[in-house]
Image (cartoon, rainbow, N blue to C red; front, side):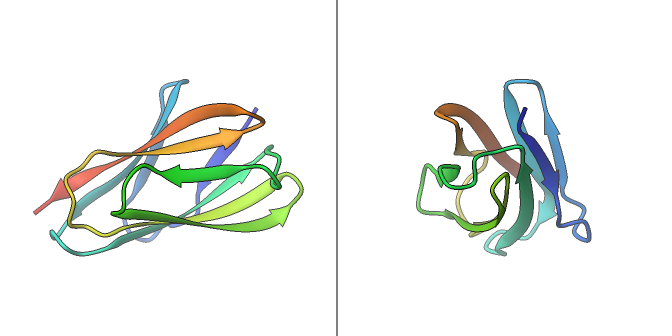
Length: 104
């Protein structure tokens, strides 16, 4: 079963899930201030694994660690309304990663 670990631990971000969807909360941040989080996905097929944003305000950069591990850097521009959804595809199975937070 796929595992996700939040590698960015110095910004107060929180990663949780409810068995169907993963949630990455950025906490409080200023509108227009980009938010960047590194995530490690393990027990995945790194060649076919993808994390795809559903809009232009978020990007995801993939770095393959091994055959079963991928590091993704997720960058949200801080301007668009939240929540945002990214689609995780692993072994032809899709899961959602929802980004949220409090813009102030």
